[in-house]
Length: 140
Image (cartoon, rainbow, N blue to C red):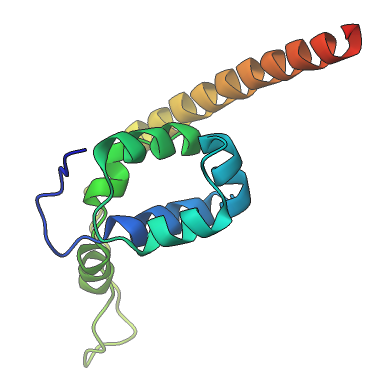
């Protein structure tokens, strides 16, 4: 049950809550997926913890289908700094906007396409698992 967070500013519990909410997953559902020992209150307490045990974090990340490193390394202050550094200053020339993109749009499209394919494959796998469960229930 070792902690792997290297940045003391990162609050893993808050990060977990952010990702869970972005994915529209309720605390009750996460507790159900974690097993009998878990309930909504225990998830709430987990989200209040600054550091989360590695094994629990790995389980939660697997349920949310995100890398555990995303929860461990998400730093809200860095995200705010990136956003604020990329906004335009209120200069003497407000009508002139210069945009210098360092992102290759073709690479971004390819990456999004690959992510979409991976998502569809996961959805098909989940559908097949659900169908299997339903068939087993019907047979009983």
